[in-house]
Length: 142
Image (cartoon, helix red, strand yellow):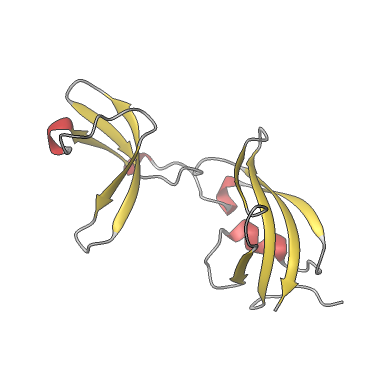
């Protein structure tokens, strides 16, 4: 039986959890995730975990934050004056916002703090700073 190697395209079912067991994403209710190893589309720890798996094999792996989304970076927290926000937005901690970059691309932000005259937004990935646990099942090697 063949095993996954670098450059293979695979289909994987997964359930991603924080170390406290809280599930943040799962493919079990939808199509399995399809990707080609080595293209850098997924976090490094996920790709490494799939290497050498066989079809129908299941395993649980722990991925350190360094192999996932990294540490939370202080420079990705920014103060924004409330006057700069659209009038209809009433910011609350945890609320998601989208910022347009000069090149037209969008950046996902989360409100980290709300003060009288300004808010603090966080541009870190929501899973930055967290070690992750994935339950994996290799469905197919293409």
